[in-house]
Structure formats: C-alpha cells, structure tokens
Length: 300
Image (tube, rainbow, N blue to C red):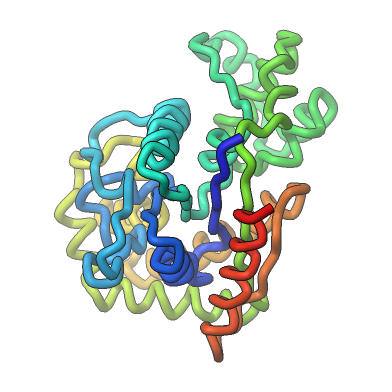
C-alpha cells in the first residue's frame, strides 16, 4: 500500500502551520483537505493560507475552482487519488491537510459512490419530521451512519435513511477498508482555549476584510454549496436584512465552535488516529512530536 500522511483537527487549531513545517522536513508538498478552500475568491472566510504563509510549499487542490461550479465528494476523491499517484511518481510523500473529515475519509477508505439520484418521493414522506426525529429513525436503521452524521445535516441524514431502507449496505461496509497505509494525526487543544482562539480569529477575519470579501460575492457569485460555508451564509443573511452585522459575527463564532466540536466527534470514533495536544507555548515541541511519529511511520 502507498503511504499517506494526514494532518487534521478542529478549525483554528493550527493545522496549516504544522503541515507546512512537516512538508519542509520531508521535502514534499501538501494536498488540501478542506471542502471550501478549493474555491477561488473565498480567502478570508475559509482561512485560506496566504502565499506568504505557504512558505513556498505547493498546496494542491486549493484555490482552483470557480465558486459557482458544482463539486462533489466523488470529484474530490478522484482528484486527490490522482495527486497521490503523481506524488509517488516523483518519489514524494503525500500529505493531506484539512478538517473536512468525510472528504478525507473518502480518499483513505474504499468509499464507492453510486450515480443514483436521490429519490424525491422518499424525501417527501419525511417532510413533516424534524431533524431530531429523522436522526432517530436513522439510528434505528443504521447506527454506524447515525454516529457519523450530525442531526442538522438533513440532506445526508435523508440519503442515509434512503440507502438503509433500500438495503444497499454494500458501499457503507466498504468504508471500513483502507486503500492506503496512512498516518492520521489529529491536532487538538483544550476546548475552552480553542474556542477563545476561534472567537479571536473571527474578529481578525472581520478586521482583515471578511465583510468586503462576502459583499464582492453577493448575491449571485456563489453556488448554493459554496454559500453554505461558515462566514458566508451568516453575512449573506445580514446583507439580506435578516439580522444585524453584530448578530452575524456572533453566529459565525458560534457556528465555528459548533463545527470544531463536530470535527472532534468525527475522529473520536476512528480507530486509526494519533491524537496530539498542540503546545501553543512551544510549537517546536509539537513539531518534533509530529516529525518523530512521521519518521517512525515511514520507516516501518
């Protein structure tokens, strides 16, 4: 099996900085593992690293797609696997960095996506159900999927129910089978400290021009998918007159904290994860720990 390294963790924890340090150490490049950093023009709100912050390290699959274009997990899986093959042709170790758990898992494991369209009739029969009621139905039908899908992600819950009711469990069972020999490092921090850092980062985004960035994409320069990114959906609502700017900023902070919590939950249920508590007072200690783990992994 080809070896792949993954640096992940909750939003705001410091994944980018650590992954760049590791890429320098291994003389390699990075593959983006964030569902929204793929889009052009969405820079501040997605915390996309600037050219200066990238320190000369190439970041593949970042900032390449028009935000009006459609892009699926299947598309991401295909492109990343092509990149991994290309890395090996150049004798480089692939490093995926980002916090989109489902996207990353779709690459590492044998996810097989069907081309079948979602059944509109199946969705209609659940119109009257709340998100919580739908999630409880999924728990009874397929507890594994329910553990991995947030109750508020109605679209995915409905799709999982549809697959469970159809008896099509073949694809889900294959999701436990890795197709790469991977090292998955999850960076974390004390929750309260992390939440404080997230709040501060949102304030910095606003100070760096987040409102102006979103205005430049409003009202019709983002696809429905891209407009769901945290920071964009809230300011869109502000620009639509649905809330004040202060309310929008507070919601960005709240939704970012909620997202961080979901990221922690996603990987807490994974078996093959190395958890590292980041040392914000001495990042060199964290860097050394990551490099040690990586060298052991590559040499085994």
